Length: 256
Image (cartoon, rainbow, N blue to C red; front, side):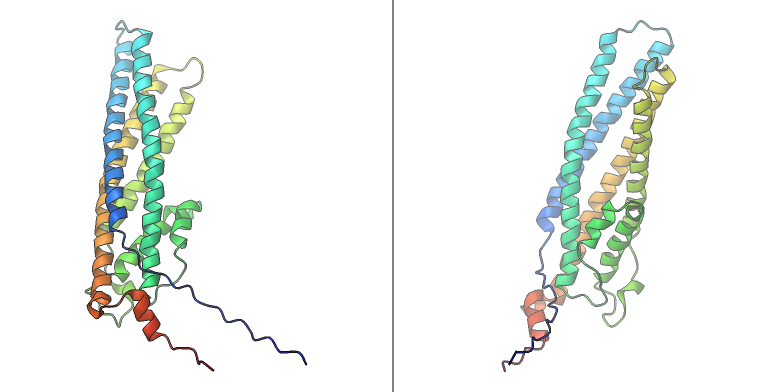
């Protein structure tokens, strides 16, 4: 009398391979812009350090000079903030697509959801190490010279990715320290040594940011080219896309 409901079968999400070359090029420009802004910020900090040293030596300094330094530093900081936000969004998009492409190509032994790489940057504590793990996994799994019948975990990792992540974490910590001293300098009756610390630690943070940005450019270019080469060797010689080849390999459902 009543028809028995058939159990629902979970359908696996099918992803389409998305080339990331154009996004990688945009990231190169954004990271280059951040390097230029870091250089300007270092110049402002050195200017500030010189200003503090002149005051300490008893030189005649006007308030207008200090206001000019602070105004220049604030302008650079505002522009840098906008550039860093846009760069961060583009980087997360690029990293997500890089990871999603691994699912699109059905790379063996690759588990998890593509959005995991985005969450790795957001979750506290986890964001200190997990993005590095994801990047190295993608690097190893796209090693065209590694035997396809072995687990890619045995493939060599990338030293450049390790160095990039080390300096990325260091520059973030340095910026936190710089921000701490900047908050102290906002109080009344601030001492010259505290103002000097603001400029000094800010300059150190910007130097680390430049190194991290240079390495980030290398990582973005290398990982993009490596994945595209892997995709080309794996699929394009057959004249099929990863999605088309997957549909051929998967068993077709019985028409009955």
